[in-house]
Length: 364
Image 1: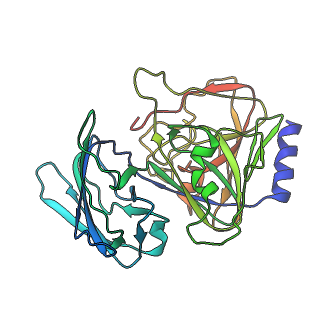
Image 2 (image 1 turned 30 degrees about the horizontal axis):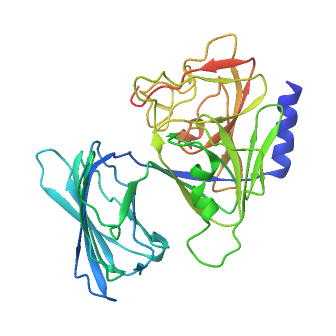
Image 3 (image 1 turned 120 degrees about the vertical axis):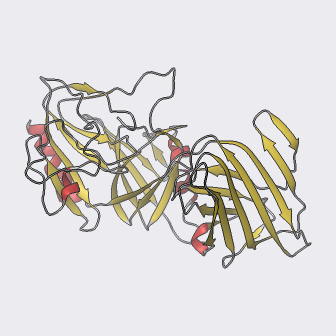
């Protein structure tokens, strides 16, 4: 146990950090079409993009639309997002203003403002694009009715993690499609959208014996970012990165199973919602501890003799050590979620013995 408290003390003296994440659903595009209107040479063009999705698309989801290299994107325009909120309901239209923070070179990031059901989602981009290129395109899985290299491409992102300048303790709420660090942290490697800043970042991971690091690509003993692990990330200024992935392995893959050691472990929280950490988290007399008290606790499958001694977190607003979550600790009446695990956050967890557990799947 000495090594557990020694590491905690050292970290307390040198680090402070915060993290915030925005959950969204992953809508798989199975068919999409692009139509450009008013393709005037050197002038502004409007684009209509219709997606057919296999899954619902959640409010807060980000659709990236990437235009050809000759495109010039300007703030001040709009993106009208359309879709059905219920199977029998009418189409709902919401206008989203385009601001400078939505533009990343020739990529336009559009927020879906309301939950829409699986099926069609429409986006009309107006007064934003100048490129003078002709484009009419329909693409579906397995077929291509017409292709045009000057048409934009598009992707739906599954999660956004916001970092603040300084140290952040984060984890991935999803299983990344590609865990390579250059893929997961591509937005950090590219740097902020605003030109000409000296942006830097560093990533660290500890496995109970060794520190691994990725320092702006110049030193890279850390090569992957995986689910169920936590990572320190230092950034020189506020920035976000976007992770594509799934919340749980798809059939026929096996369920998640993660193993840790008798020490301080950097543990990630792979979940789409806030959860209680322990199966015996006492709810009375304060009522439910977490927003999702009826779901399985995250560490609920942990079997004796291994137990969790402490779970340490960081407070984003105060930039200091946050609540200490203990197996038998009563919840905090003033801040009920301070004893809960939150998507996007990473944790230092002290186990009493080597242990494995299976994180619960969504909705369970």
